[in-house]
Amino acid sequence: MMSSRLFLQTFLSMACVLSCTRIGSTSAITWGSRRAATFQTDKSWMVATGKSNNRLYSIRGGSTLTDENDDAKTVDPEEEKKRLAVRKWRTDQQNLMQLRSFVLSEVLAKRGIPMPTLLDVSTAEGDKPPEKVDWDCALSTEEDSKSCLYSFDAEPNTKVVAPLGTEQWITLTALNRLRRTDPTKVEPMWHSQYSILQSWFGDDSEYSILQHVGLKGFLITMLLDSGKGALLKSLLVVGLLSAMVIVMPVLEFTFNRIMVSGQFWNQWPTWGRIVHAALPLKLLIGQMVWKFMASSFGALETKVRDYIVDLECAMLEDSTPLTVGVETAEDITDEQGAWDDEEVVPTTETDDDGDNALMDEDDIDVYDDEDEYDSDGGW
Image (tube, rainbow, N blue to C red; front, side, top):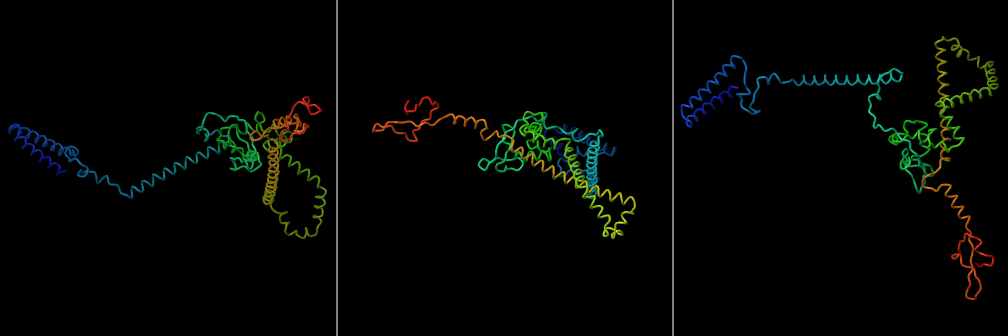
């Protein structure tokens, strides 16, 4: 700062000398005296107030500019590191608190408590709902193989379906099994553009595939859909109880033989402790037995349901008509009827000797009207 002031004083003195040589000594001396007085006045004001005017009297340039508060603005690296660590910790805690609030809101909303969820703040991809669409059915063969959205390549001699006018094929068996196991994954395979479940498997849809399955398909579908599988569970329970009633005499005889068996009572020191155990232990044993029976019944239900789904898939494969790649049954019937109405009749011609001779097979004509040909071989 002192060097800047010294430079400014030197600059003013040189200006005074140059002014004296160019515009006259009197005017130059007057101008220089006025600038020197102004400089002294500014200096006296800075000393009196304790302030500085570094921006006005300093030399321009960042390399030579000095600040009185540079030492005060220097930050300790350790302090800066601690400050950044604290700020990161606070940010992480804020994010975790928001995630906990989100999870809690979802759980409370599932229990019926009116709470905002992700659906309330999400933006739909489009206002247009999935549209109903008709279907095309084709047969995938080794010569004309079709792609599959579910398994990439359809198996030979299997039927594939796709929305009408598209080439987005999927195996009919895979589609039916997927809608039975996880229906939420069906429509996203077509980017939720088509209402596949309602259009192809809905009872009130004009494009429903189930309209071709007949009475057998209706019974199987009702067995799987009624009460979200409640009908199937009820039938299984009734079947198990009926089986127990049928084999009850055998069970009763076996139970009586065990109760009077000597080997059974020889184990009294072992199972007698369970009989005379405390009530909490008996409740725990009963709970374990109930869980085992419930898990066994669930496994039985899963096997029976999978078997019924396989029957439904085979039924759809047999009953769903083909619409792409082959002739329909009506076209084939009409073509066969047209050939049945036609008759191949041999014609005669006269050879060089004047005798009538039959024509070759390549010259056989086809006539639709039998009256045009008489029994003598002439017209």
